[in-house]
Length: 264
Ligand SMILES: [Zn+2]
Image: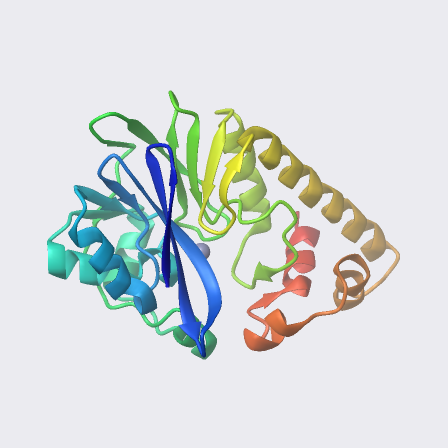
């Protein structure tokens, strides 16, 4: 599935791998002024290629190496010969992509290895100039693309939701908080998130997200000081683990979020 929505000069490509007619999980890439930001997952790469064939796409960038953001790289490069750039730390991972857990292969598909160029400090298009901001946390290689004159922040997986309830086991929430504070300094007006879509009043949304995580961390520390185990704290603050945790074999869980916040 690939749905297209226009937000002025920015086009959102909303993709999902479907099974039995239902979308499993969705992700968005964006196209602006000849620049494609992220390429979706391997499972939707053919739809992405079909859409890109009729468009003036001059360059492709990735926000980070995850399979739902860089999974279309190999096909786009092979079929259209497009230049692709990714964060420097993502380049060796994309060249030898580690084998994914079963649920990730099912939902997204295993990416093919691909050779891409490392991103510099900025990406230029005909009308815009995007600052490349390192924003580690969700993954160590993660970057955002910020266009200062428009106030656009293409945020990959930095934002996702104001009130996240799950965390991947390998995420560093302390680094995510630092990265959120870093992008906040630019006072972005519009956020283009890979999962939440377009978010107006970006600065306020990021402020609320930081405040929510800080509050949750304070509450977790208070319960920890009373001697509660991490699982119990997680259950009290976020409710019991559910389908998300079961499907991902614990790779995404509420307990991961609380455990990570207790390290901040
Ligand atoms: Zn990701």
